[in-house]
Image (cartoon, rainbow, N blue to C red; front, side):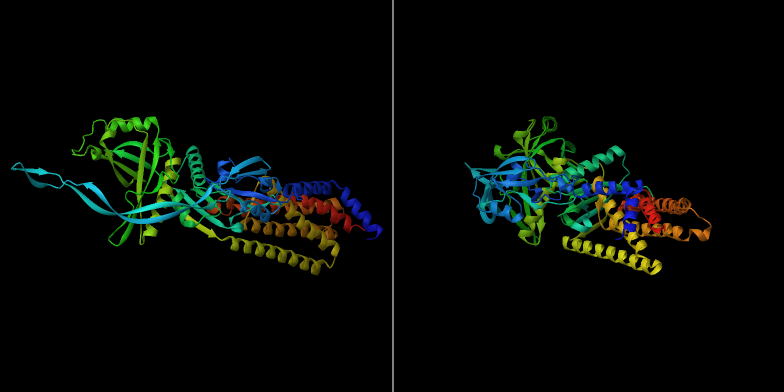
Length: 580
């Protein structure tokens, strides 16, 4: 580079437009990678009821910037830099051993739990049942009608717990992110569900629905969750849910149901899911397949019954007491097996799912601890047991979180595997690289001047970097739609730079002789194009229930960065470079 070119570079760097660009580049650098030297492993998730969960370690917030996620610094004083080092440190632990983990949020002491293996046993047993069988018996010469106690054989499914050894600590780890760029579901894999409320919701009710859904998903043990509202051009309301690491059927079962749970006695509601429930047992000792009933076959189909205990609020217990106070007791010779003349009927989404007898000793009493039961079905006993446990888990979640204020209908579901997401990333960068290469080739053919082609190329790359920096600052997620927006913004930017270049090179033929007028004329065209594009993109923010939102917003942000930051810098640079 000769002295003349060095002087031109100095003149370019001194321009305030270029200084603004350099400052914005530094801000983007810090926003994207504030700690590029940091190495190690971060916590992706904390498994429910694990040693880490018991030690009060928490799942990272889905809104937290990736670089700010909690990092593991050492285990029992040994520094941890890689996943291999972490797993080596926690592999040979023993049951009840205390492990000290130091993270960026503090020091935690974890007690290793035993890993329990559940063994299912089928057993045929005799059970004494009191059936009302009328039988004539001669007693002292008198024929008397009596009830006879009989034995019947039933199939019982029992579960045994066997300790297999120490369990893991319950921490899901991954290499610490070096950038704050957040990738969407398209690029990391998972499930996206678009739901529509059955009736239009007010703003307050919509907030309740979103909060309730997030709570359900958190109770279900899921992390990396995005739940947000969306609309379309017709004003229809939608709720968009994106979850990593769960299949489509689980999402449908968990989110599509309103989850309206009611317990009724004689058509009177005595308690409902949510506020009336103070505790729901989810531990093995008080929930699971009912050992007193087990599994059985009927009509070629297997059925298994589950049960778990819950605790009612004092108010709900009083309602139950008031409702049962005047019920009659069905006569029985065995007081221990006498019941009230009404049952406790359980309804989920207005469908009766179970009917429980109420013991006579509960009449008029405010009992807070009761048993909830239900069933599952399948072609085999294993399928029926799995269905029963799945139904139990969903019912427990609904009892904890309460019902949604409105029913939701599933409009669309998409499931993307992590492997496919990685392929999307590769393809997106390949397309972006090919687009930039094509632009450079066209510019070289058109202008035959590296002094024009290279600045346009550098300006385009600068716009991409500034856009990624802005995405890191505001927490914007980069997905396939956003990548398409980046490509569109780059294309628009190149077009604007060509307009500036043409005005500079061909201004004389249009009787525009000073540089200031040339640039002003170019920016008149650029701003006209800018406002036209913004107006065209705004409807796409709401079109398709907001599914095109990423494309529209990324395009608008990209062209705004170009018009207000990079285009002015390019204009003064090309002015200096073209001057003789």
